[in-house]
Image 1 (cartoon, rainbow, N blue to C red):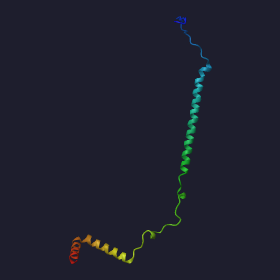
Image 2: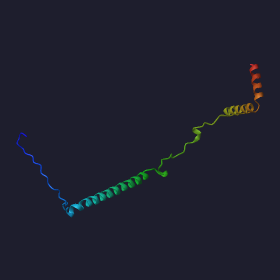
Image 3: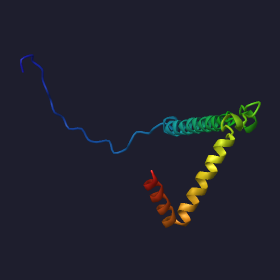
Image 4: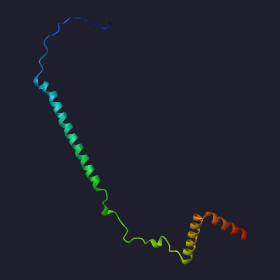
Amino acid sequence: VLRGDQISVVSIPFDAQPEEIPEEIEKEPAKDKAQWYRLAAVATGIAILLLVFFLLFRRRKVPQVDDIPTMETPISIDHIVPELTVEERIHKERQRKITDIAREKPEEAVQLLRTWLLDE
């Protein structure tokens, strides 16, 4: 030890009786817990209120059936599907009849086609 410090080891008996803690200090943790519980209850209540308001206002923003914009005058289907002329109707009717005959009597339809092809 260069500085000239001295160390001495002494035994001291333990005090068998604990110090009395003042009642004010003993009650402080209980007060702290009560304050934390109150704070948690208030925060939970605010969170629940915010959630309820959010859900209520979100539902109100959904457009009602009356609020959906509609067309003032309906579109006529005549513009979309043009009416067939007399010649086109006759042609479609013939085509339908030929298809029906070919389905009902396929052998006769094949024979008819062969005769047409041989005539040309």
